Amino acid sequence: MIYITRRESFNAAHRLFKKELSDEENLKIFGKCSNPNWHGHNYTLFVTVKGEINPQTGLLINLKDLSLLLKEIIIDKIDHKNINIEVDFMKDVLASTENIAIKIWQQLENPVKKIGAELHCVKIVETENNFVEYFG
Image (cartoon, rainbow, N blue to C red; front, side, top):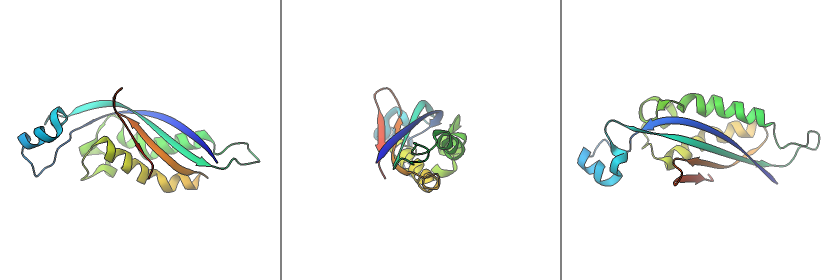
């Protein structure tokens, strides 16, 4: 079993809030991340896949295929967007980094299988001090 990771980046705005709560209640739970005027991050996405090396190619998968997959399924949909409003796979989901990682996993799991690997980990770095790893 071998593991290989592709790094991508995206910039996006979001707001952590629950519609059923007041602005004051959201502020108490989510702090400044509940700003009604949104805030943004320069995210770094790491997608790790695993599998056996193909003896004919010496590769697990072609990283160009993984890169194109990530661009089409994730980056084109989320980069320079408002996650709460514009990202289809985040509709009606609290736009926390934890939930973003889970939703990205769900978007990628089957397409990654189609290119000959198994999804191992989705890691999202939100700030230099905060990151999330999701292993499905």
